[in-house]
Image 1 (cartoon, rainbow, N blue to C red):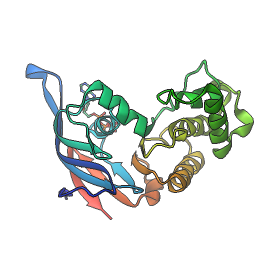
Image 2 (cartoon, rainbow, N blue to C red; image 1 turned 180 degrees about the vertical axis):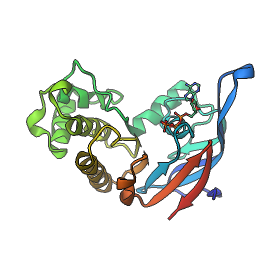
Image 3 (cartoon, rainbow, N blue to C red; image 1 turned 120 degrees about the vertical axis):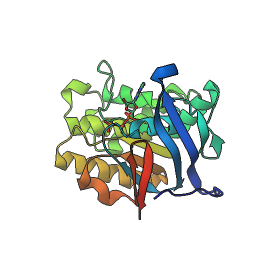
Length: 236
Ligand SMILES: Nc1ncnc2c1ncn2[C@@H]1O[C@H](COP(=O)(O)OP(=O)(O)OP(=O)(O)O)[C@@H](O)[C@H]1O
């Protein structure tokens, strides 16, 4: 079932209408997203599932401004992202926190320094303030005693918690998470999503989370499914 979009309201965080996306050029041109229609309200937690290669990561990167949307409409907090300039893409990235499958921490930086990277796009903040906020965020995710540890000295679950702290330290309005539990055992995976849900509710942010992990579906307000580049269902 496609959720047909009408008029986005002021409480709409993400509004996507008739979005197509292609990779490659000429004969190699391949359509990976077809006529995507999806509206996500502020504060909603939406899980996106679907087979490998169905286009989930591509859709997430378009929403997060990590690549430019080509055709259709994609509004992030009422800002059109289709054919956006690089400056507009940077603005979009400031409003979103991105959590990747493999935490993507910098190996040569401590937990604290990694979290500070989450404030890099907010250069107006004094350095001392960045450090304080980052340390506080690590406290919140239960790693106050690991501020100066390097990724190689942290467990998988701890690394992913650092990644969550990095994504949330700037208090983004939207959090995009790409298989955040994929590299974790079930207990750590559960802790990580519970933490994301708790922090999102406290900070009032919207979450779009891609997962194959059936054990975490219960945190969603809504589940949508992508198959072969098309949204095929949207269950309450
Ligand atoms: N940069 C790229 N250039 C060309 N093709 C790409 C690129 N990125 C992804 N694709 C192709 O687009 C399609 C969708 O890929 P995508 O990574 O979005 O799927 P996915 O649903 O996230 O898969 P998975 O669950 O395995 O991560 C795949 O066929 C993939 O090979």
